[in-house]
Length: 475
Ligand SMILES: [Zn+2]
Image 1 (cartoon, rainbow, N blue to C red):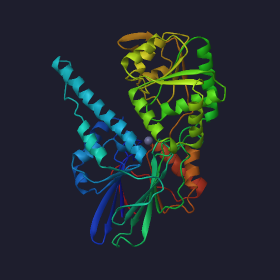
Image 2 (image 1 turned 135 degrees about the horizontal axis):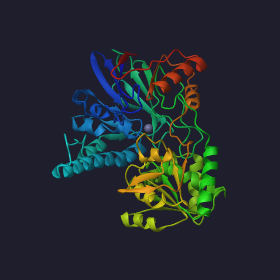
Image 3 (image 1 turned 180 degrees about the horizontal axis):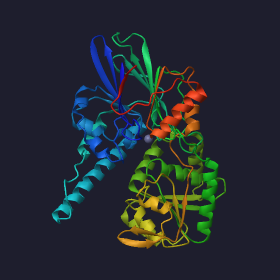
Image 4 (image 1 turned 45 degrees about the horizontal axis):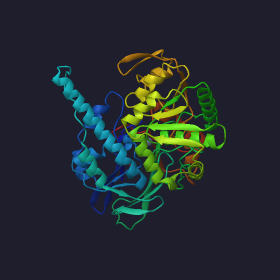
């Protein structure tokens, strides 16, 4: 058996691995994740690399979760001739419908915008080429085969798969794959390969703690925050209580740019819980992002996958409608009406880095008001408006105008969908014996190197391998 790393090796995007094995004399291949590369200079080029060879030879794909850096090139693979099944959880499939369609829309929009500019002689060079169309997304979704957690399922001759909860986002899974030893028949003993997928944090709202796995021959482990420790949820809550109370008292609005999938639902849960604990008064929360609304609907449909506290909170909120109002704006007119609200509103909107979408309008109206507060809730990449706000910009370019920033700006540091070093170690301690081979992926060099060292020093594991893109290893 060989394990090939095609992405998320030495970086955090483009998750893609291929497993090759042999039944009798026949070589077989399947993949785990087929993600898009995002950010970085050569991401575009990597996304466009031909994958027709893979489309012809892969027999199935296992998808750990819906995030685009794990799923985003699947429609392209299908368009190039891959007809096999894509195994994922049902909640992942429901989120894929939202995320992949959005990805296709953005690509079509960028192409149309470039064509309009070209017509006015304002575009130089080649026009952006969409990676895939909405039709390709529809085809890809039709190839998805949902599997429930904790249900071992034969997926290929000599290969079976079980998903366990990775606690990262709704539907996210760790893939526990049993593969027959090379050259044997399908009923002979197997090797167990475990792909952690992205692992969540413990003791956080919404998601369950990640399930630990007790045995693996080969482990492929993510390392996004392998060199960091997160702040506690308690301090994040304290900070939020302080900001919201003060802003409401002085008659302003709280504007929260938030990622539509996961972060928005997490913040709603935190705010409702603070109301329930009587640490915050009645709240009027507006969710103003079509994608966040769609993702919240998917979350509601899969309430049973959330942790017990969040399920209890949802029941409490239903029984106490007077305690807080969560309103999802239905159209552009409702969104625009929010611009007239001078105080008392908490507005959650996308995009999370303030680069596009309805958040721009809310920043436009609230940045110049010293009574209002802007609360940044996630990572802000260099060069984005969100980063400028975090760095203390005094003015911001919004909707074609230079807007003064008089509102207070706060950064909530404690929210993360990724396990930190302590949680990664806790998860690895679930193995009764150290896995024979450990590969560390999905992390920048410093993060993967640091995690690798602590696995050796704290758990006594043999030094893990940190594969580079394109490398493959016998297993
Ligand atoms: Zn993820």
